[in-house]
Each structure stands twice: as structure tokens, then as C-alpha cells.
Length: 82
Length: 348
Image (cartoon, rainbow over all chains, first blue to last red; front, side, top):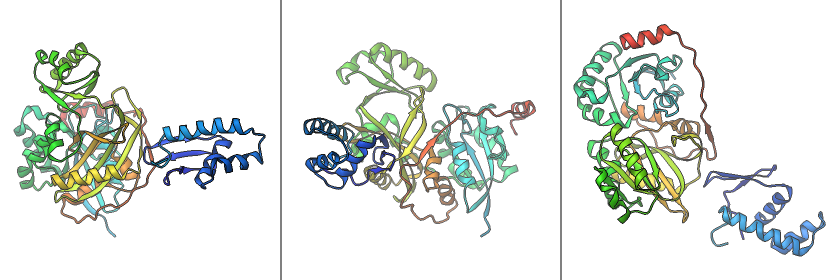
């Protein structure tokens, strides 16, 4: 699972895809997860990282994390084979 | 370095809600670090906004419509040239390009340089010839059919699924959901632009465009792709953003190389849900959004003028991705005397 290398994300959570010209905004948690994916962390590793700062149940995280990944795929922000 | 002084005549001063490319082309030329230009506007109507934009246009002359014939246009240009001594002429309207291409030799004799495609290049990319163009140059195009009579509308259901696009040979395009709407748009378009009216398969996807300049030898001097971010009810881009789209650049280069395209052009493409590019139209001149290319680092109007004058122009190799243009409306306050002058004398 890899974010396309040309996707730009700012500190404020503004995401820009220069291939399509589309732009998106991420909230704080979304930005953290997005950057974790970009760094190559797995789902489990992301859960543990978030758990350090947020009260989070695994089942809740998995549901919303999967939803987030599907959204990234829908907007073609992930590499093709993911 | 001292700038080269030249006089450039430009059409398409209709900077309205359906804007012509004239003013953006002039802005690119005015931004040039190479040319110091006297800009002569060539207008068809006395309320074209560019006539009154004196910071961009030094003087304007009204031209007869192309439908009045090449002789009328040539005689008017001879008069204008006797006063202005034009170095380069840049026509920006699809509907006038045929006339100017035919007049190329006479303009050359008058000392007026142009940089236009040849007649064969111009004709083969006509909307009515798009299927053959797609086959010849191996590019995906929507299926299309030329209509010359409303009697043919009923049989469209054999070849197309609705909705379809109904397009004029120069301008205008409408989405028709059924044969009744096709008839309405057929009558509207044919009354304005004549026949044929083109029926085109509706490809679902994102509209993306490329502005490009070919040097006539197959070389792409510059190419900048963009996506419209805001589309008016007339289908015009009122905002757009440059794209990092190597496949669009590659398609542009391949077409310019194959056709040996000479001059400015705009590719209108659709990127469908499978990420494939369909060529919808080739406009044989610079589009009205060209100033986005200038802002992205490719001053294509300046490059076109250089090519017209035989000045070597290296190819642009890059541009700024993710830069935006936003168009706005603005009310100019003009002296009625100016309107009177252009209306009565045809000059301002």
C-alpha cells in the first residue's frame, strides 16, 4: 500500500494530485494516517502509533482505516497495484 | 539587451463570457522580454472589449467578416498594412483561419508573416473528419456521424446510445438526451454555422486540455496540459489548473510529430474511467486559456511570434504543475466618443 509519489500534502492537510488536478483536505487524524502510509507503516503499526496519542479500539480503527483506504483508492491516490 | 521592435496584428478581441484568445495572446506578447510590440487589434464587432483595452491594444481596425469573401478581407488588410506595416498577423478564430491560410501567399507578399498550419493539416482535423483522423494517427476518438438533414436523426439510435453530443463544425456543443433534443440543437446549430452538424458519442470522464505549439517540422515547441476547475454554462473554462500528465504530453508530441503541425493548437480530451484518453477535438489555434501556459513558464504566444519571424526557438522542457488560472468579469468605463469612432470610422 503506497501513496503515489507525486501526491503533495501540506502541513495543513491540503492534498494535491498534480496528475488529475484534484485537491482534498485531511483533518488532523487523516493527515497523520496519510503520512504514516507514506512512510510505509502497516495498518498495525499505524494503530499502535495512534494509540499512543488517542483512545482507540482496534475494531473501530480497522473500520475507519479500511474506509480511508477505500477513499484513497477511489480518488486514485494509491499506486496501481494497491 | 534591447528589445526587438515589431508590429503584431491580432484577432479575437472578444474578451467576453465566451472569450476569444486575442487578449491572452497579447498579454503573453506584452510579457515578452524579447519583443517591444505595437499591437494592432483586428475586430469584427464594435463592442469587442479588447478594442477599449488601451493598455494592451495600441490601435484597432474593424475587419469584414470572412463570409464577405477573401477579397474584402485582403483589401482591408492592405489598407491597414499601408498605415501600420504589420510584421506578424495572428488569427485566433476557427471561423477565419481557412481564409487566412488561403491568403498566406498574398500576406507574405505584403511582408506580413503568419505561422499557420497548411490547408491539408487544417482540413484533416476538422470535427467532421475526426473518425478518419483517429484511425490515421492511432488515437482514440469518440464515434461520430455527420448530419445534413433532420431526416437522419431517427436512425441515430442504431449507432449511438443516448446521451450524445450535437456539435457545430466550428463552435457550439450540446448534450442531447433524446432525438427531440437532437432536432432542437440541429436546427439551432445549422442556422448559425451551417452543415454538417456532428453527432458524437458521449464519453463519460473528465475533460482535460492541452495547449501546444508545433514548429512545422514535427517538433513540439511547447505543451501545457490543464483541467478545467470551473466550467460556465457555455462550457468555457472559468478556472483551470496545470497537470502533471506525461501521457497527455506524449499524445500531443506524437500528434504534432505525425501531422508536422505548424502553429498553435488546443487538444480537447476526455480521460475516461479507465484512465484512457479520448481526443474530442483539435482546435487549430491557441485557446483563450493560453495565459495559464505563460504563467506556468511557457510563453507560447511569444514563441509563436519568434517562429513566424524565423527566429530559432528551443523547445520548452518543463512547466509549473498545479498553477491555477481564475477568470473574472470586470466593467470597463469607456468614453462614448470611442464607441462612436470605432462604429463610424472602423478604427480606434
